[in-house]
Length: 126
Image (cartoon, rainbow, N blue to C red; front, top):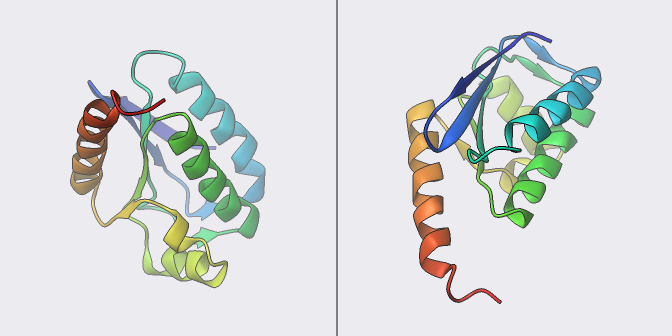
C-alpha cells in the first residue's frame, strides 16, 4: 500500500496514493491508524484524492474508523474524494456516516473546530 503521512501540530494527514482502495488494504490502514494515534496527536485526516475505486469492505472500514474516532474523542475526516468514490459510498449508504470535506484545508478546519468543541464540552461530560 502506497501512502504518505504528514504530521501537523493537531492531526495526521494520511494520503492514500493508490487508484484503488481495496479490502486487503484495510488491515494495514487500521494498523497505521492505531500507530499514529498512540501519541499526543490523535486526529486523522484521510486524503483520498487519488482513489478512483472503493471496494465495499474498504467503505465499511471508513465508517467503522469514523465511529471509533468519535467514541475515542478524536476527529476523523475524509477529504478530496472523487465522484466515483462518493457514488460508491452513497450506494452502500455510508456517505452520510462520514465526516467528508471537499478539500484538505477544509478538513483541517473541521479538526480544529471539533477540538475546540471537545474542549468546551469537556467539563459537561460525565
